[in-house]
Image (cartoon, rainbow, N blue to C red):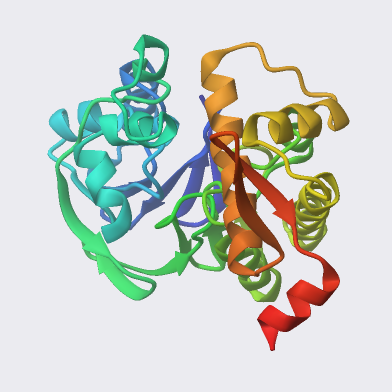
Length: 306
């Protein structure tokens, strides 16, 4: 792991998940995210120790295990206090909730209880909301980046924005086919906010540091809109969720190989269906005890909107 200097007191520890480091002239520091597990956290601690940083706090951008799995170790070994948004706090303190949500509220099988979905729980010291804030003496901006999860946040300081999982990089787009978002309308609003920001450096959680985020924003927005269009096209006749997932994966050249991959895609497709239901562009029908989704006709859609 390497420490990349972005500003005088703003750094990034690059890795599978990029971790932000915000420091001051006394050598105090806070982190933005904490990595997947204790193994990653130990390596982060080595980097901090080598640079004589004293860890005071950890801000978790959202409650996915690859972002908070190392927080417990780092907090226990430094006394650092942990912060998150209010919406993410519940999952951080009860990690099984992520797998429960994926598995429809039922107790999840072993594959969904592994560390990639079920990291050690953390004690959240304080919650933060979008806007100007001070965390452990560090003035910064908390940025609403909801969409990927309901309460995802980013941290902006000195014209550097740590933008969590609000954006997928090109390799993720190619691999996933369908962007993982819990709320499509929120995701689109977040992309608009990102496009309008005037930060000079952007740090996605996965991928390279960039100075001009607008091309990536446009690529992500285009993929979301094309997926919405694909769902509308495929539901010209009643279709089950399972069949819709299969058709979209075929169109995107994605092959489902595991239970975990299936349920992540299942959540993502449900998010698109929920968006289109709220827009009154599709409807739910039941036939032979099966739930089906069908695109509304143009006439039906107009009458509902009016």
